[in-house]
Length: 150
Image (cartoon, rainbow, N blue to C red; front, side, top):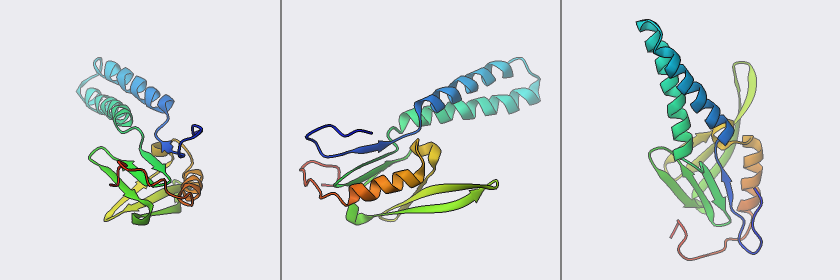
């Protein structure tokens, strides 16, 4: 993301629109295919289609998933919006392995809440996001009135 001139830098991370569109298209295709199958196929293929369509809808409804500026950050989930100044936030990069592959997740503590975001939810590598957040956190706060942490 490129910040606009003369305004404080704001970063936003969300699932890639292309991935969401593909999930919706495949989900709708599976739902169409499921109509011509027997009961077991209808159930299995239909559930897979509903899952993919639901995933695409959730991706669209919760944009951006993570937003940050020099004052703090905001994390959006399906059920809530968590916002806090940097003093109330802890961000950690957690390396791990999934199905034999090395993966990173970004763990964000906002008060009593822990939100774990992966590459798909962020639309970028969590290691790159962690670096951007660390750089932004070091930027002096703007102190603008009316922000989400007032």
